[in-house]
Amino acid sequence: MHTLMQCLWRLRMLGAVLLLAVLAASLAPSTHAAEPNEELGQAVGTVDADTWRDVKNGENFIDTRHESTYSLINTSGETWRQIRNEWISPAGLIAIGGMLAILIIFYLVVGRNDLDHERTGRKILRWTAIERALHWTVATLFIALALTGLNLLYGKFVFRHIFGDVFWANMIMGSKLIHNYAGPVFGILLIVILAKWLKVNLPKKHDLEWFKQGGGMVGDKHPDAGFANAGEKVWFWLLASVGLLVVVSGLVLDFPIFGQTRDDMQWANMFHGVTSLILMTVALGHIYIGTLGTEGAFEGMATGYVDETWAKQHHNLWYEEVKESAGQPHQSDPPIDDDTATAQRPN
Amino acid sequence: MAQMKFLCDAERCIECNGCVTACKNANETDWGIQRRRVVTLDDGMPSEVSISVACMHCDDAPCMAVCPTDCFYKTDDGIVLHDKDICIGCGYCLYACPFGAPQFPKQEAFGERGKMDKCTFCAGGPAETKEEEYEKYGANRIAEGKLPLCAEMCSTKALLAGDAQTISDIFRQRVVYRGHEDGGWSSVEKAQLSGPDVSGNLDEMAYDATRATREG
Image 1 (cartoon, one colour):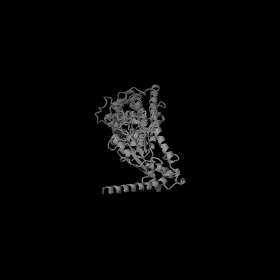
Image 2 (image 1 turned 45 degrees about the horizontal axis):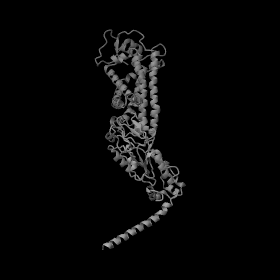
Image 3 (image 1 turned 45 degrees about the vertical axis):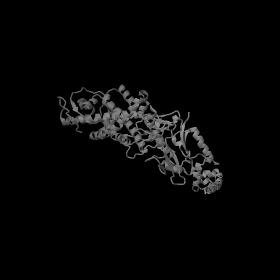
Image 4 (image 1 turned 180 degrees about the vertical axis):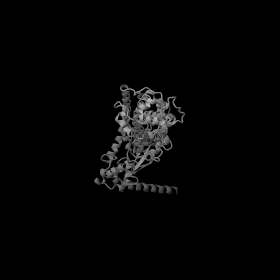
């Protein structure tokens, strides 16, 4: 019985081997007959230019990665890198450095814009406590954002080599955190401050004349100016246009939770870089005029009050209006700014 | 010095995702992080083809160029690595990368992403101890004289990893053997060919992919 089973088993094995041999023989010719052209016909070649075009457009492929929306090849990345590194980054340095150089040369050659007459000692309230608080909060945030932003763009070329890895790691992480958290606060306060000062910054006819005279630099006369001169209005409207673009593009970058694509982020980054570098460049001019450049300008934003002579020289139309509405300014002590005072701002 | 590269022979890739699994297993990446992916073109059509993609360790890496922290560096073997202690998770490397290699453990408001993670060519990264290195970057097989696990475990040897010269030689040999005119990924005008219709030959295609030698 046992041997019979073994015999049967051997027979079956023999059959299987024979069958395999026949199968192999029938398959062999097709393997050996593989001509180069035939191989070519079986190759991947059917994925043609059209397929690659589809892939570039993010179509006609699937991806095994979890929730992946990444195309096979992100061609815009390199373009973004070139624009950011080869254009925006050096252009920003040239703009900011150029502005600094111009201001230094201007200060050395022309010097401070002094008051033409003696101070009268009579003070006019120009900026209320709330306005000053707003201005300095926005200014502080602006400077913080500018410095951290510049660090994110240029810092790696300087500070890592000077301070070493550990300090640099903390410095750049701090920069990112400050930038990302202070940014939205700046955006909100910028809108508040723009709304507050919208009325006095509406363009008037005499602003054209102000530009023609270069704000007083061309000719000896002081051009007419209301509460805000045309230069201040330019700064206001720059903040209202470019400034808001900085905020919007910044928010797109800061909140990557609304399904932004990589292309969206690249655009937002380029907009943010260009607009913020423009703003920083012009801000240098604003800071210069408000501090070193003009006698009596800084005390206005520091104390809230400006001297009568200063008001007459720089904002003659405003001065006239204040005088008309209030009669002769008081000879006595300046009015007390108890946080509730309203600025003398008839126009 | 060697220039380490990945090369995926699309004609051999059978979309088994073994490389994806091998990578995940070798490096024990965070939940949701998948350093390698398999992309399939023309899915479901006769011309369907798949390719395994991860960090390609570019010679001129865009991620390195745009990183605000300069946390990337290139090893002597041409492997692009990054220092997670310096990374701030800004996402710029992801915007610049052609292959979608950089990934982040999270993506929340105020740009909170955590530290970037990407394929290290199984070469680890900067750390004080081996344990810390494994925790942060995964395996350092290169230090042990081994190649990345994804390529080592590829069942059809579609995914090659190693010195650029070596693996391109292997690939060139295959291309010559296959009789392809100008490279494995290029398009071929079917009209010019006298061979059989490709769609009727799918079985032979699969056979071709796993065949050891021409005579075998």
